[in-house]
Length: 423
Image (tube, rainbow, N blue to C red):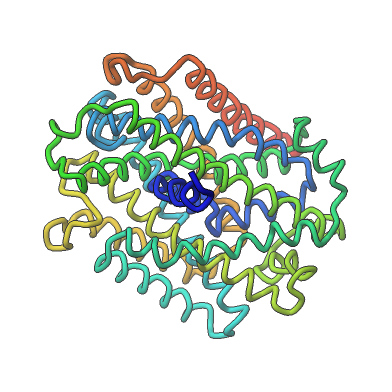
């Protein structure tokens, strides 16, 4: 097989897994990784290595649960958990998603303001309304097809990492030798990195997109969607693995770049979009703001629809009403109502003039806290033969799943403990 044919085959399997991986490096992710590099140097690079298989395993479990059961993760949770627990988890994720939507729109607006200095409020309304209209009138596939290429601006961080000549021997050491600092600020940043990497909205979006893909194949009834096969699982896992590897490669280079530029020069407290853009100046000079804005706007335009849709899928599957991004608005009014409410609340939050960089960082921390109970449920469901039959997760996958829960839970507990002690 020729190289061109191999590339075409590789591209043909990219779907929901790659989309979720790309949207994981949203404005919240860019800001959180930038804060990590600027404030903690290279000390969190090992997380990008460890979380790659963790992300792949968890997203694979979400996809597998949906493929076997023929419905999204929230619907399976509603059937398998006490209703109070299912409702509580749904509310937790929808709340985190809504805050994340507001933070992402704020980040996009701050980045756009660097290039075209219109009032921030004007950009907030523009992005919020434009994304809402696009999501109601266009399918998500069309939105993603147009905007996902803007995320390639993130590759500027990869190039810059080589331009600034970081101490590569030290970088590699920090990548492969884990260590943890027992202080509240460092652990808060660690929870933020974990929360923006292994983030709850992706769990539900991944599973819902697997159902949407099945519907497009003609399996419009629940009974026809139940069950899967080895080939379908293999392709799904390949798609997911590529997406998660891409996501963490970008995270690695953002941390290296900001550590070698901002962190190395004592700029540890990133408070504005301008300061975050400075990390690109060694490569781009005065065009740094343009590259930074392209990355923030492009990934935000991909992530905000994912976040809003994730909330809508969770609500629809929890409360049993019609769902689907390819459904016209008049056939799924409550589904699109949840999308609209999430974006409108995000806009209102932004008009309170929150600090976009800090909001993006703390939305990642909130996701890190919310992820722990959700992960516990996912691993339990994926390991249950009553739910999964012969397709339950392997012992190795379960081990990685439980390791993910332990790592995130310890980080959250440590953050609260050492923050309370004031250390």
